[in-house]
Length: 383
Image (cartoon, one colour):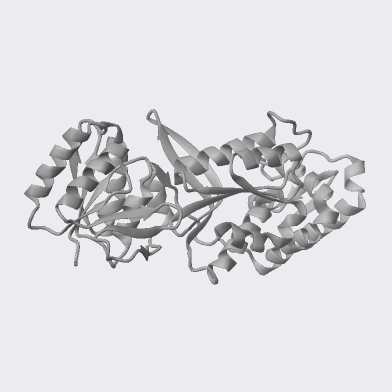
């Protein structure tokens, strides 16, 4: 039976209300949103995503999302007013009283009811019982996904990939990670000190740093690729892009390439981005955040933060490592909801304290020599 109208219950988790609308097999022509006062802004975010999908949208105001009797009466009136239209209820969202009242009214009227499984991204028919559950199409993209969560995605670069020579350099840094971990920390520091300078030249390095065999070998590699040169005890980078690459941008590109290569074998991956700027509003003020790597798989957001610096002296509380964990946890929840996943990828090994903190916040880590098997780790992470 064709469904003309989806009735959805607006909540803090927008994805289950969007994905059925984007699936061509069950896409309606119209969406009716049941909206409580505290969900008004989220309803606006949803509408901004649904309208470009080619469906019309209207709202039914709910005065009290916990008054089950009033909810039941409001829904009985709504169903009676639309008795000649093909309605279906998406019962996934809303408060529990909203979901219970809506289920009872639609079930009594013998109207279709479905639920979107938050972990498996499957549509489960709750009524009628003879309809089989089904996987939902992976149609949503990062821009719309972030928009549904109240964020705007900045302009994405036209090209993400690395030139072959730089890809080989990045792969070599991972392959010889045991040799270059210490030296790369020095290069990372030099590149960081050159940020904002024109030309991009570092602070002066000490003779002990410049003459270390591992650093000389690493620097020779970067010099061969015309990314940097020594100048009076400092490092002069070819341009801002070369400085960024040396300051850890190479790892961001390496991780992005690993995810991109998996897209060919895992059809679950539907959109990938690197170096994304995401803007949220907080009290009328724009808050800018950058995501190193982000992608959607089975309509779930995955966020990866890439670090090449060494987190020195990390104790149980505080420090840059803890800050990275807090930031990842907060951004993944804000931009992807409860089902989002986050990973910290570090060229340097992580202390036990950082690993335990990451585990406590359900953040996956891939650090040090684990990078050699990054692709396998990503594959298991996506599931």
